[in-house]
Length: 426
Length: 176
Image 1 (cartoon, rainbow over the protein chains, first blue to last red):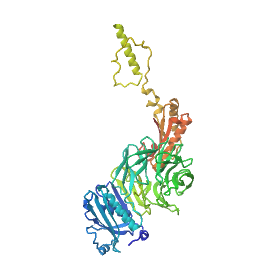
Image 2 (image 1 turned 180 degrees about the vertical axis):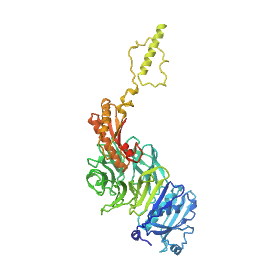
Image 3 (image 1 turned 45 degrees about the vertical axis):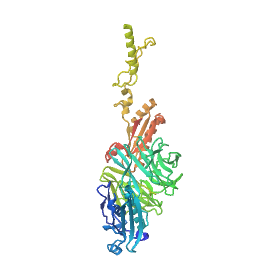
Image 4 (image 1 turned 60 degrees about the vertical axis):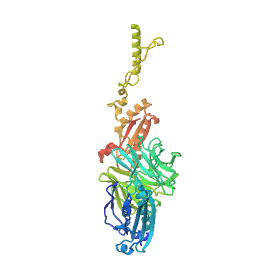
């Protein structure tokens, strides 16, 4: 069996890329996957007994999640109806080191009881199991939660399949702020406007999104409660108000305002009170991003000429330059462990996604597209979603931080941009 | 009888004239004809003073062929300095705003599509601020001006070439 440590050692770059199209006819987004590790964990995901009663085909969602991660080789398994009598050696012979089986039962109260087991075919033993009764609308979520459990038990890394993303969909002059599952499915409308919406940012508890709306003919920062629809103006000072970023505590935001005559970084309470300038330069300071420990703010500044990424204490003070290669580095984002910086760099007139290991200073380019924007880490720090352009349309892409696994998400119509990956939810 | 009808005529005429001194909506009927005339309480009407009406087109701001019709200031690539061809635009609007203290404007800075949304928003702000500073130097009050940025979000030209980009490196003067 693969231990988490072993998994990290054996996953190597495959060199060749395979492309697959996943999702059913009603899929809201088309997902193309390319590039996987060469030594993936071989896993069989069986069709769940009786799963046709469920509005969502649980096993298909689990399979798609695991396959998209690049960490697994999915072995065809058919349906396993008797989940208590498993022919372990038979599955081992088919090449599966692990097996997922499960059942779905329609309950009298209208809910669905979704049960699953993760089995080790080598040790012939159960690794994990879950049993959850859910309403019809949460059957998809239960599948993502099972995929999270499998991912964690077999790789040691917390799965992010049950997290959500937010992004802006633009069709002509209509702008829509959307919330969807991390796989682009289960899309829900949060805000519709005839004016641009940019820079959505999730609150740490995943119930609110801050964003910049141009509905007042100028950029103004709002916080919207996704559940109650309540909207609060967080920053509407004279001039432009933009680039909201939540403090890890969830009770403050950093924003970029031009109220003093040029764009500088400020902090403000979620209700709009307590506005305080924290950066101090003669040029542009924007795109603040809190470090996960809440102690520092990373931001983009042109104080040295072109835009570069800097770090300062969260309550202001001296700024230290972080990026040195290239003349245009923008849009800093920090991984949840605080160790990796993702950003967009312009090199030879291409705007591409890079990561910087903050300890070693090692820089790696992760994309081979040329119009990349708005990077956003998955909350487990293992994947980065970003906006890019494909076939003249704006679309989203996901890449693993090691650069090996790549996915592209394309909407059926219009442009999608400004992605932001939501937090783990309670 | 004759005297009374001429008085009623005069009162009606004065009422119509005073109604005309506010902006006229042609489709509305004159609201005054039904009023009964109380001849005993009526003061002597002034039938000699003319209340003038100005059509909207007399405000130079609304003259489509006037200098104020040009409300865009263009910028060079990677530049945030008002160019020579933008100076008359700034000067004309500054002169109007100095004369018309009750008028307020938004200056909306814009950029071309290349690069990040937020950094472009800050660059567009620099263009709007350049126009704002040029106007305040010409005596326009700060309270009449708000410099904002639309970044690359509202391109005037939709193309993906230098011609379109040059159109989009711009600050627009928008009267509130």
